[in-house]
Amino acid sequence: MFRTYKIKLSHFSHNAKFLIYSELLSATGMTFWGLLFNLYLKSLGFSREEIGNTLLFGNLAIAFSALPMAFLSNKHRFHRLMGVGQILSLVFLFLSLVFTEKWEIRAFVFMAFAFMTASKILVSPFIMENSSIVERTYVFSLHSVAGYIGGVLGNLLAGTSAEGVSKFLGLYSADSYRVAILVGVSLRFMGALSLLSFVKAPKKIERSYNVSLQYFKGLDWNYFTKVLLPASLIALGAGLIVQFLNLYMKDVFHASDSYIGIVMSIQSAAIMTATFIAPLIAERLGKVRAVTLFYSLSLPFMVLLAFTTEAFLGSVGVVVRAALMNMAGPLFSSIIYEYCAPGNRSFLNALNTIFWALSWALSAFMYGTVFKGNYTLCFLLASLLYLFSTILFFVFFRDRETRFSHSNHVKK
Image 1: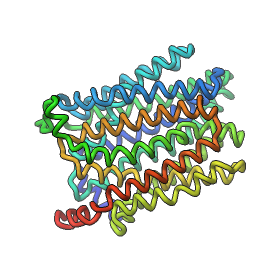
Image 2: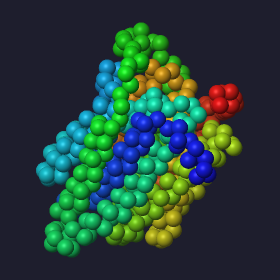
Image 3: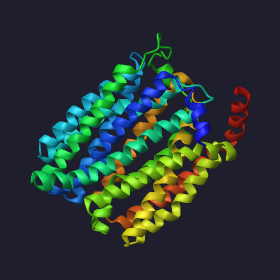
Image 4: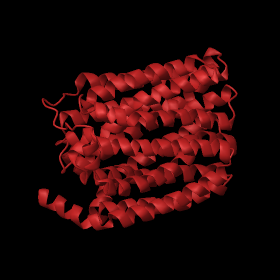
């Protein structure tokens, strides 16, 4: 396995390698935010409904800014938009920690996630632009792996840093969370600088298109629907789980911050290992069948999480579910963008980001306002959504499996 990756890595472009390096730093930094921000809001006295509504603002920001970012990418270099967007988002993340009124936090979170969207929608087109079909799946996988390594490091550091800051600096709970998150923000800033400083822009932008009614009519909306429908169902289910895992472990298992950090680190390590293995399994089974298998195997663990009150069983369920679901991520991206015209990839990614963000916004609303933080209902509904998404994905893409495999064989 490692020999295969070593051979593939030697063919990676300069830009692809630095994208992966930047992702490692950025993911490590943002893991501090992901692990601690909900707990920070809770320490400020926010209820579950108020926490859910605050996260809703961030997801709505992604939805509103995705298309403008995609259209800007037609005129500007991918890496510049991604780097500048990250830096501006960090400014607003910082401000969201300085001010403590609910409306101030939500306004700054909205702005932070709006600028963060540049990276979300441009990373896949960037990889497509800077890789060939021979190593593309491996670039997607290693980019994901870099994020998961960052998750391991970030969770280990973040889970203990808040408690350490509180113990050694004598700060109260909210202040200790604030200081710990700021450490992570600085790491993401370093990742953004590396993206701007070391990535080499292509001499010529070849993705020009005119945003007009004719352009929209010429898009393959039938294909876009087949991509967006299963992806949105997955997003809706994931939003009910992933956004609130730290609160789930705190509320159900009464876990400490350090315990949550350790579990999340193990989760990231498991995802990283699974992502390494995924392309090798896909070469044997085919990408579509592999994605379907990974999604299906995750379902029993989601049902387990709906009912268990044992910390160990719950921790196992959290880790295994995440590993199986995220094995499919790079494969899913590779599949959907291979069959999309190069000039339409940014637009498809923007649409995918919009639907994903709206799904997570709806999930945040359902968690806080509809389900009132009832984790059993959240996990059961997420299981059904994952099941429907898996069926739809297989039905929509199974006929492309043979064509994709044949195309790879010919080009190699």
